[in-house]
Image (cartoon, rainbow, N blue to C red; front, side):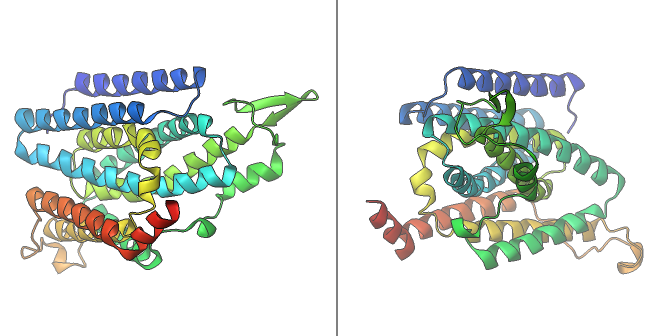
Length: 329
């Protein structure tokens, strides 16, 4: 896929401008978004992603269009799972509802920056070392097995990141919230605010999430431009999704298992691709493994869509989900 430098520049520039404006707007007017605001924003973001994917399909071909849609759906699904942890973080810090979207937005911007770095590093590694697909594949398989074994992470199982614990020990932290400011002064002393700790926690957590998402999407497309845009569109609607379906997320009791299957599928796909392109001397004498098939993107797209539908339906129909709905009512 030949992407002109000016397209990269326009895409990155538009993304930076959008997020800067969004953060600035929210810091000036912190509030809990209404359902109407969330629905309107999500409709816009999802529609924009679909239009972009169709544009890729018609301009660059069905192969690349399918790769974008597969990558976007996978990243969006992993982002939804991330919302479980976001809900836990907001609860542990007792973040006031009117400040939550500001914290989420800043955390999302940090995540986008870190994923951008990982995307560049991943692209460079793939270009130089074809065997990196073995590492990506093995990492995703292990991640999938751990995710399936642990299931949905409950609140009591969440551990605060070490960096946040270090900051608590070495920095003075104010007990009272001071709007969405990161620092305040009390008695002439400069203190970090609870909002600073919340954003730091979200940023560190998103960094860990990126370790799963970037190898996963490189298992669906090797085009850095598609990897970047899929991540951008997936992260754009995350904040609104948090407020819109926060209660529904608790009922998706099998989401972690569905995602574990997807990561396992993509991990196997990566390993098969690595074998097909093999250059390691201790595997098949350094020759390509001809019997190892490359799973086509259309099949990947079918598996991703099918898994998400089955996971959602099974979750909403399960006894656990009905029990949680009864408790919530």
